[in-house]
Image 1 (tube, rainbow, N blue to C red):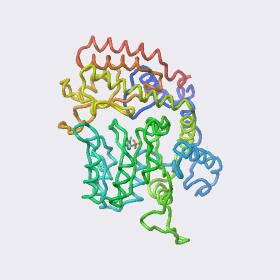
Image 2: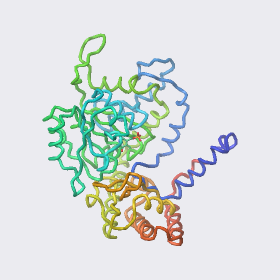
Image 3: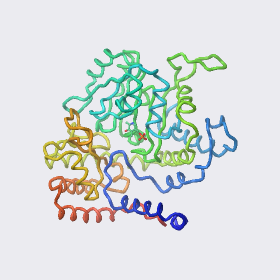
Image 4: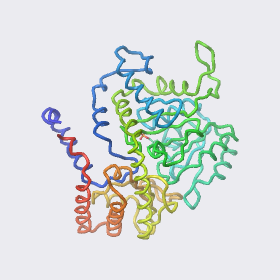
Length: 431
Ligand SMILES: *Cc1c(COP(=O)(O)O)cnc(C)c1O
């Protein structure tokens, strides 16, 4: 980055500081990961200059021959990775992929059913402050006191609400989903089934978790969480089907496929030009995820989160649902006399990055909360194994037991620096 350094030292300096922060902090935010050098290079490429509205072979601009090739690569690799009929790799983010689903399936005021935000759901699944809750009639199912989704409750709610769309997926739910049970409920009430696999996509690609594609009509994801690609979104369909809304193609008059509705919801419905540089980086990341090593990565992520949950429980912590199936662990800190907010602040000052998180049946505000959410996807990318994760749990425990003790904090920071030096991350970025 010598050019940037001399041309714009202020921006260069912030990047240099961020490199330092990522290299020498413990990254435990469950939605984050570290991309490869190849992903960074593709995303930093001159494809950022290109306008390519439309789809490969059907663009509104000239000069798209290489944009077409790279988007086709991304699409083919995504189809191979998830063994599905159709994919759209253009959504700029998980939220815009989800917006395209709403635009395709619902009209303002229509009812849908999703997981309660306070029980692990996402803002785009009907939060009152998100378009999904503002424009549509959002209804929720939740988890039981054991922290798991109760399928009988989902069915009861679905029969009562008669939603046009049922969503699965969460941002702080540590258990796998029973897609077959969801599908039979959707079929019973005549609803479409949509899985938002933003968090576990990488583990699903590696087949270490249940596969939603045979059961959900539509699947959305981010590409930057466990899938370890650039920041972005994607929509997939396992087996394409005639859209149930009877929408016809303008010229032929035939009923359009669901994939066609989603394609036009992304563009021109939701977005303008696609981010071709990000699509190039998605292609690179999908290829990485197709390699056999990625399965080892996913298995290690799972092993690491399992040992994390067990170690916390051994230290007397309450882990929501009593464990984890995926990459994340949700801690209920009420018996530790600290709020999620204060835990987040104390851990941050010791260079441990986590986020405060609501726990099921939360009594505190979303700005305070009683829990923290931890994920192992990023540390596993660095090379952390089970014994390292046990060390990490002890470091977290020391901070949480003495949140304002400066000597504890300084010792923890030193230990973390040493751990991070064992697993170097980005030595190349500033080269
Ligand atoms: C992260 C996440 C999203 C949103 O992704 P962005 O890229 O931040 O817009 C959507 N749904 C779920 C379940 C998520 O966890």
